[in-house]
Image 1 (spheres, rainbow, N blue to C red):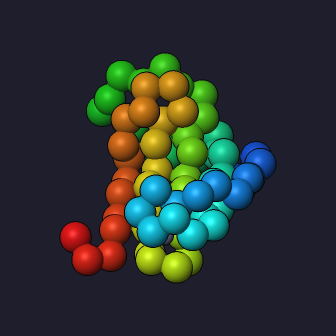
Image 2: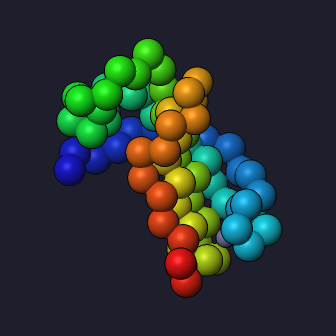
Length: 74
Ligand SMILES: [Zn+2]
């Protein structure tokens, strides 16, 4: 997997544990392989990562389609 280069980032509350998590905005071209078989008009994806509970969520910015999700304990 190529290294992901965030366009920008912000701090958000983790929706899972409520701690401070990092949200990165990524160009969707970095996910072109995962999206090859889907009709996606989004330009960006958001990647939310929480170090406290191992929460990970990758979403298309417009359609909210989940590309990748991980929660500890589920
Ligand atoms: Zn968390």
